[in-house]
Length: 393
Image 1 (tube, rainbow, N blue to C red):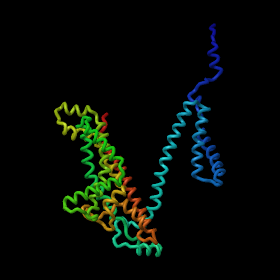
Image 2: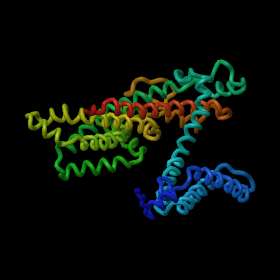
Image 3: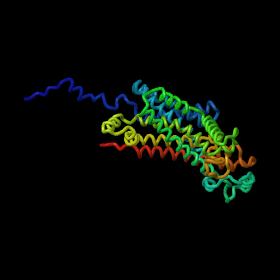
Image 4: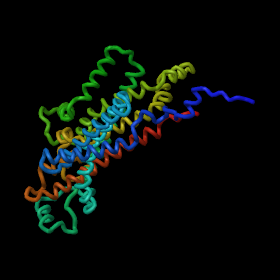
């Protein structure tokens, strides 16, 4: 006859369940919902109590503060201080992200709500200019109750001016910026000359845009004075698309230099050393090894630099003037860009007694400008992905 021996440990395990589990010491999953509901109720009461009426902005601010504080206390009580601090930091990061989205969403909503109806009802304004449009036309449009004929005038000349000026500025800035970056990364050895270049590039990054416009204006004036031999140069001959492109290139060059320099420094030195070991010359290594490897980031940086200067107003206003008709020649006469057109339509309406048509044109042009900048940013992401080096297995 066999006897079964039992130990106190086995008896205790068979009688009492295990006390430790994967979920022990964790707050329930519905805790955040309960805290959010309580924060909303308290915030609504405090908003009405403090302001005398329900205020959406005040409610959101108070509710967010109460939610973050309440969730921290709940986590501290139910779990521990480390997890409570971790949750507090995570919630603060999310709050900062949402706060940063508020102005972006607000701007996009304002531009869409004010500019999209005008573009839908009057698509012809993207092709027409303001030549021959007077306050009489705008007053008649308002008095007739926005007739089916559509809004007179448009910003086709400003769209063409923006494209022409930006293309010329890009053709000036990209070669200078890329060659400067190649020198800093591949040829300089940290001497005084390279340090001076870096210093001046940093200074150029922070200069006001109006200073760039004044520089371009002075430079073209000086060149025309040397060419013509005249002591005074007419304002009309200085303000043109080329002058505006030079002003924008002053703003673009430091952005291109910095972005290209960072991308070139990311390229591993092993690739350069391998090319040199095979007997490849330095300029061939840069052209066929270094630049193709970094072309993704370089193209993305150039596209972002173009988007950065496409919306500049002050330098173009100083250097290109303001025209009411289409001008394809950047070397002669005034040329208008979209930012300048928006500014002039708002501060100097075509009809001072009927400003609604000018305001409608300004919002429509603003929507088109925001769309162009957004497309350039999307193009930068696409280029970065398309030209990125293919990963191996």
